[in-house]
Amino acid sequence: MVPDINGPDGVHGIAVLLHPHPDFGGSRFHPFIDGLFRRLPEVGVGAVRIDFASADQLAARTDVSAALDAGMTRWPKSPLVLVGYSFGAGIAASVSDDRISGWYLLAPPTDSLAGAPIGSDPRPKAIVVPEHDQFFPPEATARAVAGWASTTVTTAPNADHFLGHVDPIVYEAMAWIGRIATPDTP
Image (cartoon, rainbow, N blue to C red; front, side, top):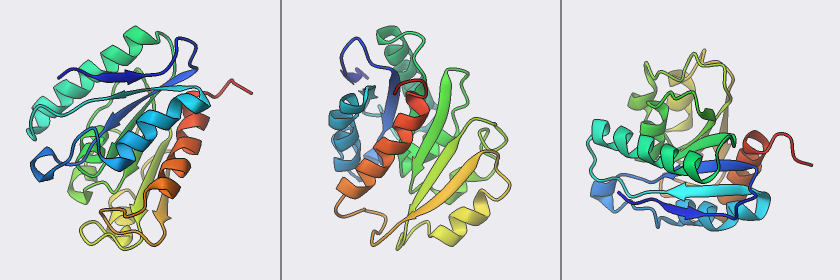
């Protein structure tokens, strides 16, 4: 696993981007992940993306740790947001690391949320569920995270699990990530 890194030296924050399930075509080039990777530096956030070596959850968490290391090596002391979509969101929910300032989870698998270590964590979490998600509907996700600390759950209108037109979701994610990863910038 060799991470892709995008952003100049002077970024104010970092986002580590985790893609959908690798066994079903998910990669670091998924339009949502790629859109964030290319656009986040415009708002002062460096981006790190990886391809998971496998769908094994332990191996995936190891990949995430290496991506966090790569981001912090490139931009030490920068606030870091862990961002995941689908499988990547499930993996992100399983990673509680002191270097993380917040989590952005898009279409997370509801089974990955039950008992997730970040549920009681006071750091901010945004969970976005496509309005017509055929696998993990908004109601099931809301139930799975009821009682989570510092968590907002919103719905991406007119989208199913595969998202369709991703630009509106990318821009909404960028705004949230920017607020968490660059809190002290004008």
